[in-house]
Image (cartoon, rainbow, N blue to C red; front, side):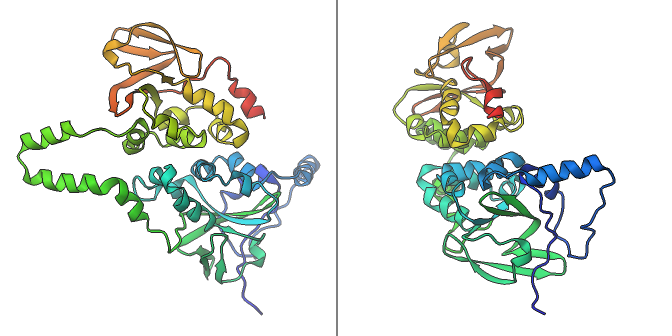
Length: 371
């Protein structure tokens, strides 16, 4: 008998399958797959769900809520249309926790426009050019859409893809199937340290020299350094991953890296996380790029305004609508957002950090979620 990977595959449609299967680890075919449903109403509900046509791989990933970084990366790489196409595909999908486990700064580096080729290579290394349910997968090497091979292996009940563990299987989509993995696959041709070195090597060299230099000289040298653009500063801060992903998806990197000057009220990752569930993922979809652009440019002023020059009142944004600045004692507000840090300098403007996302009056977030 030919040995094949036997992983439990519960075949339900779309988001229903995602919600259930993400909690299930890969297990043997002798598990209790035949759970009995006692009520007729429940049986009818399951049959109705099974009859629904799931969305594309991108739709399912967005709906799951556990693949925000993957969706942002797919958007930044321009692969949404490809993975929403006819297919069929098999995607080994890393969770948000898998991306978070990468070396510090790597996700941000990959989202930069100059690294789009490396990002595309990594993402397509997770994709097979055919639909392969768990029941049809056998141990061995398999060619990916990227061109290099991944290796599937089995150790008892544990199924591995290279060094990643499969934690859920057979998440159905209209154009293929998703298997969930707990770490990000990197093709042999990509050196992640080289991507980080591009941003960090000069800083490391300077830090090494500073250790030997007198303290006064080190301070003078740092003061003389020219800060990067607003985008560079946001990437380097490490607290604006979602903002950088959104700016990339909206095609605003070049604009905010331009001459300016600009003032950006920058929401932190926690600010984006506080938005209604599913809204960030919806905004990153190509069909909502106009709404995403409107929201992002609503955070931007077309002049450099340090905190010392800010006065209470209404101010026009690059988006066209106004924000309202107000002061209550030591607390400065932008609409309903609190300013938590000011005067982060960039070569083409200044950043003030805020604790919630500003939404212009012309944008209805509930409509985006309904769509």
